[in-house]
Structures are given as structure tokens and as C-alpha cells.
Image 1 (tube, rainbow, N blue to C red):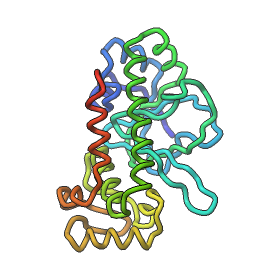
Image 2 (image 1 turned 180 degrees about the vertical axis):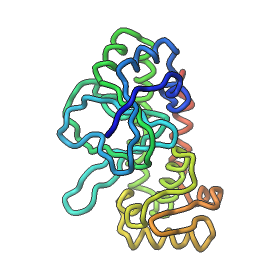
Image 3 (image 1 turned 90 degrees about the vertical axis):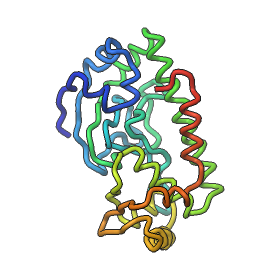
Image 4 (image 1 turned 45 degrees about the horizontal axis):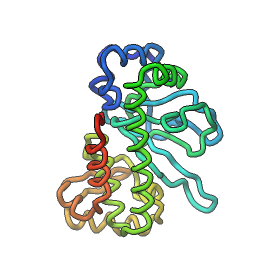
Amino acid sequence: MAASRVAPGMTAAANTLLAALTDDHRTRLLRRAARLDLSRGDLLHGPGDPVDYCYFPCGGAVAGYFIALEDRPAVEVATIGREGALGGIISREELPVFARSAVLASGTFVRLPLDELEAIRRNVPAVDRLFSRYADYFIAQLFQAIACNASHTIEQRLARWIGGLLDKTGDTTINLTQEQLGELIGVGRTYASRTLQRFRQDRIIDLRRGRLIVIDRIGLDSFACACNAALAAHFDGVPGHP
């Protein structure tokens, strides 16, 4: 995991949360930050680890939180892209990690020592409010995911997840197998494959070896539930959101 210094101005364009800071606050916050180029599967935090760092996905980089279950592969419970950050946002202390966090889409991450974030939040109310608003959005994402998984069909959930990932990466290609996609949303490969083949027959997606390419976003959204739209509306409705 090679690290380099954060170039001035890079974060303002690449991460929405950091872009919402003033130039002075951003410079102060990132004085000990490092730029990392990470690949899919790279671990950010493991269960039981102390949270020493906060990670900001930049550009098309995406990470997720995963819960391991006894009898099946880990299930993804939250997806974070350039709109946010992972690590110490809600707990605000170096508490042991419960959920594993890892990279979903390769790209650049800014890694910030958590004590640096805590220091500026204690001393600068505007920064504290910004991260508190993001924490509210993150909790809303978890609530929405619980309701979605309990109420919506596999078809709706898979279309929602694919669309949500495209929004975060800005790309139309997802480098995951059908089995991996099924595992991420907590369904078996057979169910995921059956749904993806229907999308393919409707010319919504194309399937390649280890890749999924969306060719009709409007068609994909027609199958999705309204959970992503509900989250976006909530985020937009929070005063001063980034």
C-alpha cells in the first residue's frame, strides 16, 4: 500500500465531502493526509481493528462495509464513494471495528489520521457540523438498506445496487462476476444469474467474463426500487449538505 502526499486542490475536485470544506479548513485537515492508489479487495479496516485512519474515496473509487455470516460469504451493508468517508465518522473514537471495510472499485483514496479529524472537529464547529450531517446520511443509508432487503424483490435490489454503484464510479462497467454480485446483496448465484440474464435479454446490460456493462441505464432504473432516490432526496434536504 504505497502512500504519497496529497496534491493541493486534488481533494476538492475528487471528494464531495472534502469539497464542502473551506480552503483553509481543508488545508488544515489534510496536513497529515496521504494519497493511496488501492485495488478492489484491499482491506481498509478488519473486525476488531482499532480505527486509526479515516478514508475518503476520490473520483471513481468506491469502498464498502461487509458483515461476515457463519454459513455464507460476507454481505455488503453499505457502499461509500466520493460523496463520503469511512472510519470514525459516527463513533468519533478509536473503537474496535465491527464490520470489515474494503475497496469495491479501484482508485484513489485519501487516508487521514483519525486524531487529525477529531482535533479539527473539536475546534471548528463548521467542520463538526459537516461531518455530523454526513453521519446522518450514512445512518439513513443503513436504514434504507434494511427496509429494501426486507421488502423488495431480488430484481429490484440488484437493479438498485448496480445503479447506485454506477452513480458513485461514473462508469458503466462493473468488474464483478455474477456470483460476486449475488454475494454482495445476499442472494445465491442462481438467483443473481437468473436476474442478470433477464436484464441481458432486455438489452439493459451486457455480460462479459468477470464484467457487467450497463448499456441502457433508463431501462435498468425502470426495474429498480425507489430506495436510491429516497436517499438522494434526504441528502439534498439536509441544510448545508455537501
